[in-house]
Length: 245
Ligand code: IPE
Ligand code: IPE
Ligand code: MG
Image 1 (tube, rainbow, N blue to C red):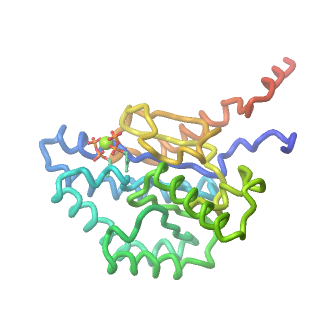
Image 2 (image 1 turned 120 degrees about the vertical axis):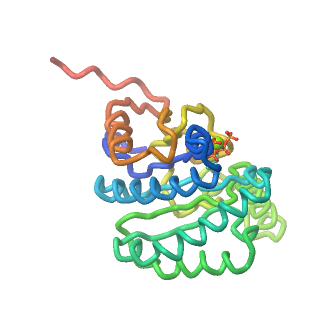
């Protein structure tokens, strides 16, 4: 491991975008209105991330557990996702954004699955901001899928069980090509991970912001980045010496 201090700007920020329903309920609006407004916050956050030179941004848009929601809410969310893709893809591509999708995307049906693949292919050569959308994503399912792949490789003889190490395990996850998140932000005041990036966030800094996701914007992101810069990341090593006055 390098002895260089980690840079003050997080390379990878991951956000649990929570609170759309409460935002709507406070206004006596249907939950769908909160999700629609949440899309505007996504737009603002991507722009702000680019301005801060963040290289990786992961957005938790739909969890594997969110299928437990009423069918009409799932339909609204799927509609919004398709609408977002169609209306934003040009702008994202022109802004230098490369899109990646993690999660069980096939559960949204072959048409949307194909649109997601097209969007990824279309932005493949961009690298200003890697935007990872977590869709029907659950960390435990991801880890189980990695274990299955590893088991198949060991059974077929292409992988020696004694050679499996942390890096090798990481390489079997959906996030294999991505750096671990340095900072995980959750909005709406809830303080839990809800099955998000459990392996990858092992040493992430956590920030819980009371703002409901539809109200999140550039200043919230700037505050989180500033707070991150004040944290002392130790990775189990000794605390950094207090600088001489
Ligand atoms: C986050 O907002 C969006 C998704 C989980 C899809 P919620 O819909 O969870 O909003 P609350 O938590 O009910 O306020
Ligand atoms: C987590 O939010 C999932 C997303 C933001 C997509 P939830 O609202 O689903 O999480 P819980 O149910 O409060 O833990
Ligand atoms: Mg919620």
